[in-house]
Amino acid sequence: MTRILKTVADTRQALEPIRKGTKVLGRIVGGRIPVSAKHRLALVPTMGALHDGHRELIRLAREHADNVIVSLYVNPLQFAPDEDFEKYPRPVEQDLAMLEEEGVEFCFMPADEEMYPEHEEVTIVSAGEAGRILEGEFRPTHFDGVLTVVAKLFNIIDPDVACFGEKDAQQLALVRRMVDDLDFPLEILAAPVVREADGLARSSRNTYLQGEDRAAALSLSKALSAVEAKAGEGVTVALAAGKEIYEHEALASMDYLELVDAASFAPISEGFQGEALALTAARIGTTRLIDNRRVQLGA
Ligand code: AMP
Image (cartoon, rainbow, N blue to C red; front, side, top):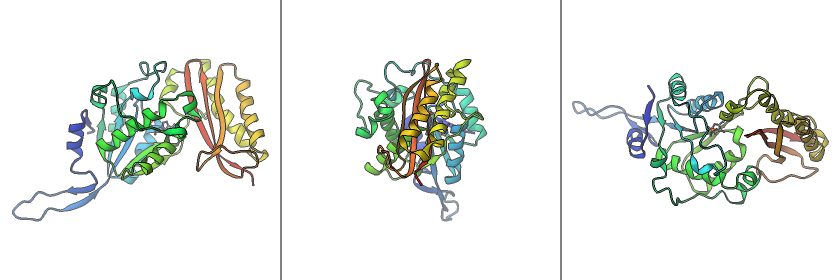
């Protein structure tokens, strides 16, 4: 049975016996010494509307810990006023069924009042300049909202490991940097992008895609494939090939298609050799999607 936790206090209390790797297994009965054992706790932060991408993270968490906690929380702080916070899917029963199916021990499912009781002003973790490029150029307050809620989750849950998806590559890089910069005592693990059979990256927002929008959404993964196919010919040619895919899809409107150094996220220029990351975002009607792929540039 997945135990549902809704408050910070209940969560701390429930996790107390397994936090930071030690659990007292036995009680002192008849003067016997209690037995201690290692019990690692893994956190999988999500906004719910769970799909196979989340399932992959839960399985990764399970490989590295014997207790798994999944958070289901649509964090208002990471949405701009004109974004889809209100309409974001919240199929709670379905989500809980998946957690049961995967044998997840705990689910943290707080209300907004629990996470942000004051609401007027909240201390924010700043992603800095790295949070204002790529996604950050189009969603300027997004990564500060993400880092703030992730820092809160780390403090509330105090896991040994936390699992994130490479689907949100910039988010993953910023979370890793925050963990280093703010000395969170935990390990970050990443799972590869999980896709539909036709290449579309799984996303909770895919449920918004109806009819011809669903076909148009393939332009993201197709653009990344085009970049990959032309990677041997250099940055300019590769990006042009990707952008051409968008030009042929009237229903897709590209926000960006960029190549960055996969290790540092630094922009790369012509002549770069090594592992790069191709990142893209596009709008299909009112649905905004992102995707990325590792690409080998040069010899
Ligand atoms: P979300 O619920 O969309 O905030 O995502 C929660 C976590 O799941 C994040 O770490 C995402 O990167 C990860 N995730 C979402 N979609 C995918 C996917 N298609 N493949 C792998 N990880 C994913």
